[in-house]
Amino acid sequence: MDGLNRASTDYDLIIKNGTLVDGTGNTPKTGDIAVKDGIIAAVGKFSGKADKEIDANNLIVSPGFVDIHTHYDGQAIWDSQLKPSSIHGVTTVVMGNCGVGFAPCKPEDRVKLVELMEGVEDIPAPVMHEGLDWQWETFKEYVEALERNNLDIDVCALLPHAALRVYVMGERAIKHEAANQSDMDQMRKLAKEAVEAGAFGFSTSRTISHKSLKGEFTPTLRAHEDELTAIAMGLSDAGSGFMEIVSDWNEPDPETEFEVLKRIVKKSGRPVVFSCTQRHDRPEFWEDLMSMARQAQTEGLPIRPVVTPRPIGLLLGLNGSQNPFSGTDTYKSIADLPLNQRVKEMKKQDIKNKILSEDPITGSTFPLINRIGYSQMYRFGSPPNYNPKPEHSIESLAKVSDVSSAELAYDILLENEGNNFIYAPLVNYADHTFGVCQKMLEDKNAIMGLGDGGAHVGFILDAGYPTWLISYWSVKKKVFSMEETIRRLTSDTALAAGLQDRGYLKVGLKADINIIDWENVGSSDPFMTQDLPAGGKRLMQHTQGYVATIVSGKITYQNGKSTTERPGSLVKSVKDIKQTHEFAN
Image (cartoon, rainbow, N blue to C red; front, side):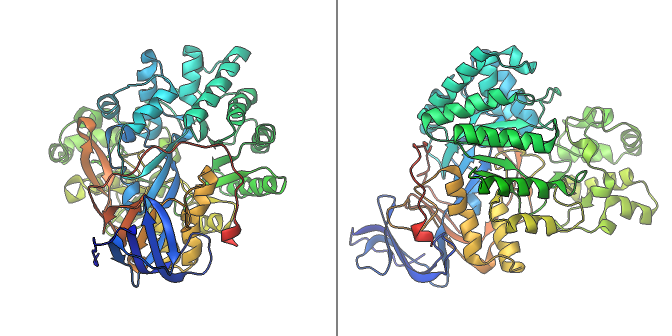
C-alpha cells in the first residue's frame, strides 16, 4: 500500500494500475477504479484524486466474492469478524442454509433450536448459549438484532424451515406430523413477512444426516409438498427470494422428488438451489441430478445445483469435535481433559486396550459415522494432502505394518502431541481423484459453494473454497481461466442469491473489491483456535495472496490481517428487478 494523498476529496479511494477482472468473464483490462461513498464511481481511465490511493500494479482487481452457503446465523450476532470466510476474499455471505437457524423462535423453543444447530452444524451448545442474547422472537426482530452489529463483511439471511415449523407447530413439528391447512397458511404469511423484513428466501432439509445430538431428525425431514409450496408462495407474495434445499433424494425416489421441486418453482415462480455431491454409495447419481437441473432450465425453471471444488473432508482429531474413538465409553470418560493430559492418558497401554476394544459406533454423536471406514481415512499431513491415494489409507498402511487399522489410527492421533488430524473425504471422492469435482464445476448451471463457513467448527474447514478454486483449479491445474474463476466467485453467486448491486466492477455498484496476488493465493495448514464464546474451539487457517479486501469502499483486510474497519452489515432483500447482463456480453 502506498501513494497516500489526503489533499483532495474527488474520491474516497482510487485503486490504480490494476488488472481489472470485472466479474463478467470477459478479458481482463488494465485500469483504475475510483470509489466514493461506498460505491464504484469510475472504472478505467479518469481524472481526479482521492483521500487514499492504492497502487495495484501487477495485481488482480476483482469484485468481492459472494458465498451463498454459510451458517453464520449465531456468529453474526456475537462476533464482528466472520472468519474464516472473510479472510478468503469473501465480502458477502448468505446464511441460514439447510433449514436451521434461530428465528422465528418462541422463548420456550430456544433450547430445541440450539440442540438442532449443535447436531446438524457442529456448533457447541455452550458457545450458542453464551453467544446468543435472544433479543428477538420474530424473524423481523432477528433482522433488527443483526442490524445492530458492525461486521467485516455483509450478511444475507434465509428463513430456516426448521425454526419456522417449530414456531408454528410446536411439538407437532418435532414429531414430524403433517402440517394442516391452518399451519400452512400461517407459514405462508410468516414467510412473506420475513422476506419483507429482509430475508433472501427460505431453506429446508430433507436428509437423515441432519439430527440433533439426541438423535432426533430435523423437523423438516418429512414435510409434504403442499407445505413447501405454501412457504414458497409466501416468497411469491413478497415478490422476492429463493429456496435452498439439501436432500438425500431417497423418498419416494430421486426423479419424483425433483419433480416436486419443479412444481414448486412453476407455481411460485421462485428459484431453487440444491446441494449436489457425489455420495460414495451412489457414485453416479450426481450426474442425473445435474442433468435434471439442466433440463429444468430449458423448461424455464431456475433450479441450480451448488457444488464443491474439492471433496468435503472430515478432519478427525483429539483437538477437534470428532475422532474415530469419540463414541467409545472410555474415551468419553477422558474427553473433557486438557489435550496434553488426554494424550498422556491415551498413551497408557490399559487405556489404549480399553478404547480399541469398545464399540465406537453406537455411542457416536456423528450421524454419518457409518459412512466412513478406515479404507477412507488418511493421515492428513503437512502440507495437507487433500488428494490421497488408496494405498495411503489407514487400512492399507495397517496391513503393511501388520497392525489393526484401529490401532494405527489411534497412534496417528497421538502424534505431534495430539495435534494430528486424520482426513476422511466424505463425498466427491469415490474414485480417489478430483475428477468429479472438475466435472461438476464445468457445468455452467452449477454454483460454486458449500463451504459451510461458521459451521462444523470442530471437524470441517471448507470455508476456504474460494482460495482453493483459485490456487488449485486456476493457478496450479489451469483448468479454469482467471476471468472464469472470478466470474464463478462473484457475479454468478451474487445473481443466484438475487443480489443486484454487487458482483461486478461496474459504476454504480457496491465497492466490494479484492486486490489479489493471483499466483500466490493460498492458505496455511488448518489449526485449532479457542476464540468462540464460552471458550469454544474452532478450526482456522491463515491466508496469503489477498493484498487487500475492500467492503463498501473500506479496507477490511491487508495481506491477511484485519484492519479496524467494520463496514459490513445486514443486507435486506428487495423485490425482483429484471436481471440484465448487457455489461457481461
